Length: 102
Image 1: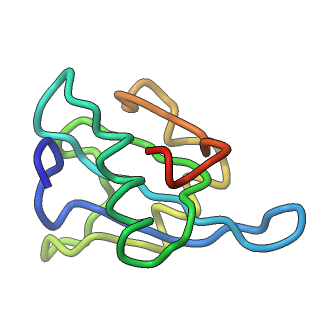
Image 2 (image 1 turned 120 degrees about the vertical axis):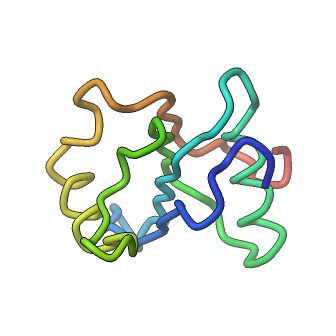
């Protein structure tokens, strides 16, 4: 996907008011691109699920193991504690009312 670093994307669910919500955290590799719409459209087209929140980090900010694998559970933990917004986030967006419109 243009603007997103390959292999540097994590998706997970968090509790919502009624049902679980999908969160996507990704490292971007280009500034100024409309990453939010690209990610939301890709998830919607493949799953028909709406992304509740998308967080775009600078390269090197996604938690990884010593062998370079992304740490989904650690990323989820940081998200739930609100620690992904500590100056490393390039963009943070919330769900649109109509996922088909993105």
